[in-house]
Length: 466
Image 1: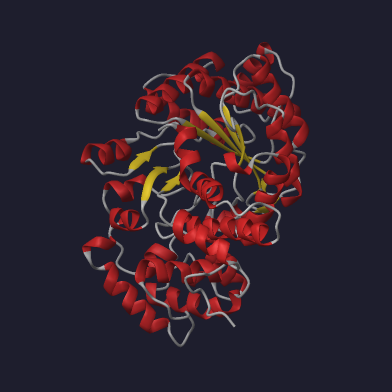
Image 2 (image 1 turned 90 degrees about the vertical axis):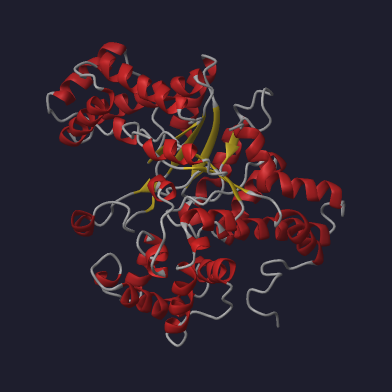
């Protein structure tokens, strides 16, 4: 019987162990999509307790705690840091076979050198030991980033953002690249005219220009896009239920925009036309400035209206959706490609039924200009665990080129989540190691070692060219 989470955790064969320890483990981290607040990096924030870095914004843990019967006061409420940690420690034993069990203990081991199993019996001891270490200078935000051997971080930023913290980080000479990524979802949300018009007011404030017409709206967004470009941004991101590619005319879009600005509710067809127009226009902007675009598709968000109204978004009330993906995504990509305006693109699905769909979709628009111009993104959100990663890599292997894959990202708000890259790399090496042991691929460590190093870091570094 193997020891829990030893140095060969998830590595079932000698080949896998060699690939991980000699190749994957040494590679830096290129974290091209996350939700870490740039202000905390700029301020080099220090965390007083493990609760602050672990539980203050982690909806994965909150969902598990609620499922375990823990009151909301200990998740997002006013309980003390110790009380929240204690409730998480009570929940951890019940997370066996959930990736949270692995992530929790990987983070304790990687960053704090703690091999103990977290439970009610060990909670106080582990809490005190973590807090003592967090009080030392090397455990600031930047210190933790250094510990994890991070090369590049791309945050997630709204077009109205001032990017002041990114500029401050650069001015400080921090050796890790911390770059913004353009996330213009709010500029498409015309379902609620009041919310949309409040957002337009923010755009006006950020740009110093009034917005009365659709042309003015697009001009301001393009100026903000250029502003992001001047501050190092080369990457956009869209969080959508599905792609949108309805037919529309310029006159229709201008009329729809005017109707929304007047506070009138739109029809479902009008909403779809407007979103279709905006996705296309954002794609054109990205291509014009040589950016890469990302589409995160398939989340059914804010399902619990009672708790959404009480707590707001991103609190753990989202799930996998079952939207039609293929047809509208194909139409959108084809329109951009036909006009020679299709940027490098990464596609992510949240419903595992769409794995092969995505893996085949990217093959439709590869054009030989860039290795892996279109990418099938890593297992995302509910799928960024061992089973989800394996299925994503198997689909990509069967239907594309795994060797050209740009690899893992954290998609996290926590500075301790860099262990997800380790989890991914161990899973990758184990897949390849098993194939070698089964005689399905050759035992060529030069070939396999390069493949692992490329997927771990080199492919992303060469693909994004930040």
